[in-house]
Length: 278
Image (cartoon, rainbow, N blue to C red; front, side):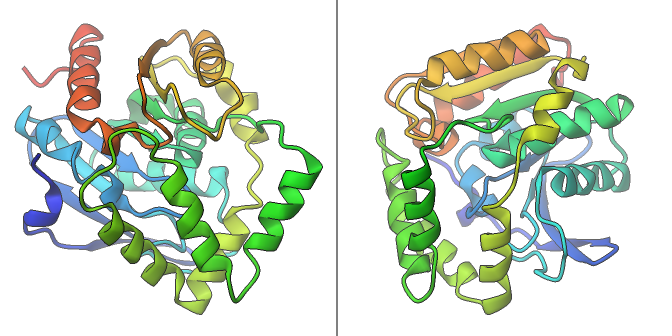
């Protein structure tokens, strides 16, 4: 399984009004594809899925969220709308239009971006998407907030993160978790992460029916973040007139659990909707 960690990449930065957003680029001259991770994760979550996309001719860009990874933690906003505007700014800077791949909360940001500036977005791939507020019991919500309090917050998140991989666990998951923990170990980044956990996905939900670009919804059948992953995936697809890929045995990160399957499905989808490289 090829992964980008074995390739030489250069971290670059997009200047935004309150700080910088980090990204790296792979491939060139093909259709632009910008991939963003979920809350509490790093752009390297796409380390296995990106290589086949690059090999297929796409110009693949991996972006860190605000306050995560190599991005600055100097912002006042860390929600879906803020990330959506980062995605649009990066698309403009790289000469879009772009296909946006959003995982978890970044899927909500991608939806908002596509509705806000459809001329810049060619298509969407929404993986384990949070595009509305999923009902969570009051006790579970309080327990989550308590778990994120220092000094045990980082360990609690990294432990929970492991639970989101119920299927084919990547061999290097422990290394990836260590990188997440190191990122969150910086005080400003930890505060940014906690701020991100308060994100409401209502702005994304309100823009769902305004999305007019081809959309693929990818959901793991065992994603523990949703009461019924299949129901959620098909509801989202119905709102955006999109298609659904359910990945058997996968959790919240099917692009890392079953990257070859997901990449192949994404490439087939892009070909079917006229966004293929050749």
